[in-house]
Amino acid sequence: MIVKKVPDVTFRTRVRDENIEGPNPYRWEDKTTADYFGNKRVILFSLPGAFTPTCSTYQLPDFEKLYAEFQAEGIDEIYCVSVNDAFVMNAWGKAQGLKNIKLIPDGSGEFTRKMGMLVAKDNLGFGMRSWRYAAVINNGVVEQWFEEEGFSDNCDTDPYGVSAPQNILASLKMAKAA
Ligand code: BEZ
Image (cartoon, protein in one colour):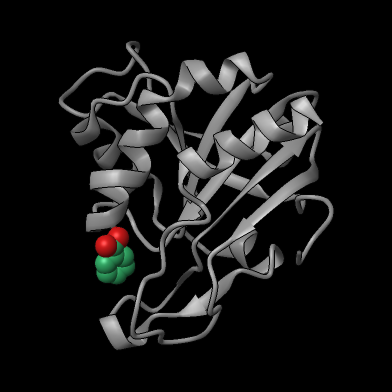
């Protein structure tokens, strides 16, 4: 595991505001680590990019479908963070029809860098992105950590398994039974 506590950063989000006229009724809203993680037990999962195939076909929709089961295991929120800006993350959430999972834009990569999870993906023309990982985080403290194997820059493959929601759910159930 890289960190024990999630780093303090400010995320620049875009939120809908019905008081704004015109075709694009959104405004900036800064959210801090404390806003997202304070006094809650959450799942955080991170992936290489919005709209990428594994993330859009399996990881995000599967977390969305299994949300109630995570709640039953004492999880208050499920967050997906990616090194993408708020416009991209909002468009991805809309395309996915998300109701349960909250997307966190880490456009500058500051959060991901401070988590120790920033990798180069220049081989794909992506620049710096997140290695795929997930965590159970209780009031900002990492309780369980799920990192895909082979952490590296410009990785040829995109490992996916350990951070799949089914695996995390099984781990939560096992921890509860122990
Ligand atoms: C995928 O999610 O399938 C993916 C992620 C990064 C690069 C290419 C594909």
